[in-house]
Image (cartoon, rainbow, N blue to C red; front, side, top):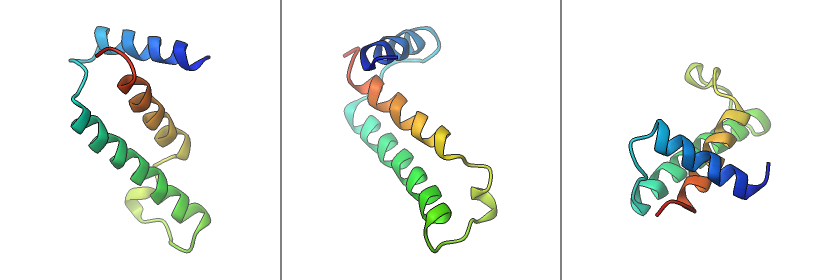
Length: 78
């Protein structure tokens, strides 16, 4: 899937299931949160920190998909 195809798919999803596009500020905060969640998994998987009980069900691929979704949604539809 190309980036353009991903953007189109996200746009269709937002128009079908989402409420609306969020503001730039909201998207930046959400993106920062998702990058932090990915960083937490990386720190616990490859770094010196150990997993907390609340982190054990999180998965790197899911967090990366959340980031891709937010980046794709931000670039179109406004």
